[in-house]
Each structure stands twice: as structure tokens, then as C-alpha cells.
Length: 437
Ligand SMILES: *Cc1c(COP(=O)(O)O)cnc(C)c1O
Image (cartoon, rainbow, N blue to C red):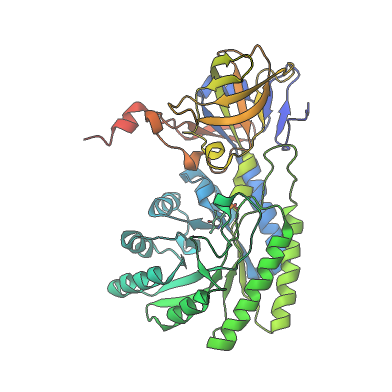
């Protein structure tokens, strides 16, 4: 059955009150694989890729592509899925490049981001045949020139521009404003300076421009405003330097539903709207249509994920607060600690029980800030051994997991059709000790 907790189509509840994810019984999965456990709905991931690819094809024909921002969730299996679906990939470190490479991902379709690529990263990426570097600033551009020259290569680059747009999202993921560590700002003339520099370097080939205004963005007017600023910029660059842009990357950032109050974005409609605007603007300025890229991360994988925990302790403080401690925490999900991120949290094996207690669900780390969610409604007799599920955990959880308190990272289990399989095994104490000399 479908209850108010079922915030995504892949969530339902069985007659006996057990949460089902992608049709699988979560209690049975917890029993088989242990908790904490990350679940990922492979069919949903593929469906999201196809939604994006279909919409981009419809809006831009051959002049469009979709790059999966792998920082949202980076492991070999997910890169294999992206390869099979015909996505490009956005990587931000040698580690993410190595992961895509291990999956056999065609790295000529990789875009290498980050505001500080080390010389070793640059060398590694050029050696691996990474198609494009997304260059953050002039220091990096010169470093790429030096490494590429030394290697006798020419590297294609696109330049990250800050368009000066406020996406109205969490401060930590607002990246399009001028005052931000990423990119070269148009407003300060730095976008023009770095373009001129790129055009002057012999071992760098300028392929275009990039921008990314933020993450968890719901307001489609943000993207329209971005298109306006960026296409005007491309026209200005053409007028000043005679350079015609091949590629324009509009970044990622479309929001997803964490709680029932969040809207659902119609990705196809949003991309159609951007497509119309891009065509209008390039016609207005008389510039050839560049290859347009979208770089979604969260909206590809977030609602394909769910995390299962087991309750270990319940502490009730009359007149204060109630605490329910689970066997995970900020080590497997730091998003509440980082942004106060909201989640839908449910008692996975007792979905039909009355939830008559408000509590904070906290982790097991030695840190009183180790909170997973506040103001959660759970049954007042919730007890040690009960199962708790957090929804919409496919993005920025496994990829942000740490070993604080020497807690091993959970396994990632993929659900596909009637099957389930391990994509990443649970970390062991031996794995953690392996580095200690
Ligand atoms: C994080 C990031 C993305 C993906 O953002 P989502 O909100 O996950 O879609 C895309 N491009 C760049 C440059 C990013 O930093």
C-alpha cells in the first residue's frame, strides 16, 4: 500500500506494515546484509538517466549531453551503469577518475572538475586520457600548460565561470555567486582574463565554458537567468577575441524530494524550458549553437537510495527531549551536521504503528553534534533492535562517509528487478587497519 511516507514511486508498505523499497522487503534485506546498510534502486537510477537523456535529445538533438556528477555517489558499479546508459561523467579527483577507469568508463567523455587540482592529479588525468579539464582559475590553467607541455600533449579545457547568480539553496552548496571559491567571475573581469590566457597557451585547447550555480535548486528561473548571463558572455567573448564557443556546460543542481513538502521537479519540462531559452538567446546574439551539457548528480541517484539502521538505545528526558540512537551516524551521513538537511525517517518494520513520540535520531559517534535528524515521529515504545529507514539517501552519503571513531563504512546493496546484490562490501576492521604501518 501507499502511505504519506512514500515520497517516491519506488517506496511502498506491505500489508503487515513493513517498508518496501523497489518492491523489496527492507527487514529481509537488513537481516541478510546487516545494518547500517545503503540500498540503491538500480532500475530507478537507469530510469533517471533515460529521463535526462531523452529530454536533452528532444531539446538539443545531437547538441546536448548529460554528464553524471559522480561525486554524488562514486563506486565502480555506478560508473558501469552510467557507461551502459550512455552518460558522460564529471569527476573531481584522481580517485574518482580511477573509479570510472576501473569501471571501463570511456574517459574521453570525462570532465575533470575541482578548484585545486594538484600537479599529480593533472598528470594522472592527462595520462588516463580524460577528455576535458574544467578549469577553475589561472593558476590551474598555467599548471595544466606546464604539465601538458612536459608530457608533449595538448589538453582540451573548458573554463568555469561564475555568472553571479544566487540559487537560493544551502549556503554550502551555493556556487554561482561571485563570492565563492569556485570559478572566474564575469563581474570582476576575471572570466575575460582567463579566456585570454587560455587562448594564448600552446598546450591548452579552449573548448568552451562551464557554470554551476548550486545544488538542491527548485526554482527553474535560476537556470533561465543562468542561460541569459552565459550566452551573453559567449557573445561578448566572440566579439572581443573572435573565439566561437564549442561547448557550454550548464552544470547540475536540480533538487530532489527529501520530505513530503518538497516539490517534485519535472526534469523533462525543466530541460525543455532551458532548451527554448538557449535557442532564443543564441539566435538573438547570432552565435552558433554550442554543445550543451547538463551535469546532474543528486537528481540521478538521490531517490534511488535508502539507508537502514538498527536502534541501539532510547533515552527519554522528560521536559527535555527524546533520543533514539542508531548504529550509524555522521560517519555514513554527515548531511544533517553539514546543512541541517531534512529527511523522511520511518520505523521500517512498524509502518502501521502509531508514531506518538517526537525524538532526535542520533548516531553512535562520540560527538554530541552527531545528529541524523531532529523532530522525528516514532512509536513511543520504539526499542533496541527496531529498524529505522532514512529515505532519499542515494546522493552525498556513501560518497561523504568517513571512518571517524574508526567506524567501518556500510555496504551498498543494489536492487534490480527481483534481485539484490552487493555493489560495495561492508568495510572491515582489517580494511581500516590495513594502512597502519
Ligand atoms: C556538485 C556538482 C554538480 C552536481 O550537482 P547536483 O546538485 O548533485 O546535481 C555538477 N557540477 C558541478 C561542478 C558540481 O560541483
